[in-house]
Length: 196
Ligand SMILES: Cc1cc2nc3c(=O)[nH]c(=O)nc-3n(C[C@H](O)[C@H](O)[C@H](O)COP(=O)(O)O)c2cc1C
Image (cartoon, rainbow, N blue to C red; front, top):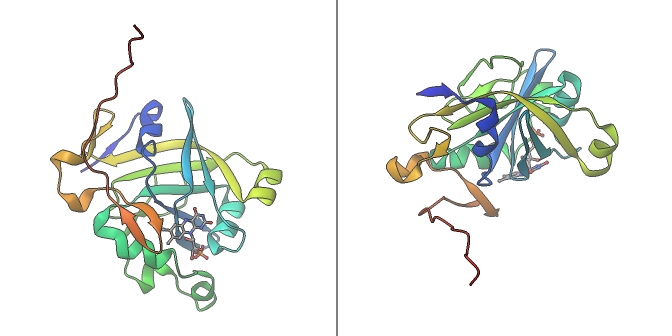
């Protein structure tokens, strides 16, 4: 079940470094790509950073709309992530279609932005770009403020991920290379060492 996540806790949705899906929409077009290079940047108001290469079709939709969604996919979606991360929506848009239609990817409306949110993910962050053209041009790096966040309460509740209690298919994906992903495993609690 999708539940809103209080904005000061939104950074925790990305704190463990999952591969994400980036969606954006503008002028009747919408698109979706994979991104492993995404991270939280601040607590409150929460901010994120994500690398969106200049060659991607998603990049133009983000620049035109000033917004994007980051969503956290799960193990059940490994093929979907690899597919949208290895194909471009540009030729599809030219043919009057998109990745959602071609691959049968379900989605629902975001609360505050135009980007579609992907069904079956375990967290969703709606983001408004903090325009920084030099950074975008030089490093393909986009900074954004998170304006709404939701998570699937089967795996994220009370401000924490609980992968140990849920189906392994709901674990997040952590890309290594070549379409191979690690899933989060056992939790370990670190304590501050008391110097003697
Ligand atoms: C697992 C994975 C992670 C990726 N991470 C990034 C990333 O962090 N930044 C990026 O610009 N592209 C990344 N890519 C590549 C884009 O997803 C890819 O270029 C995609 O086809 C762009 O789609 P588009 O042209 O429809 O926007 C990744 C691809 C995969 C499969």
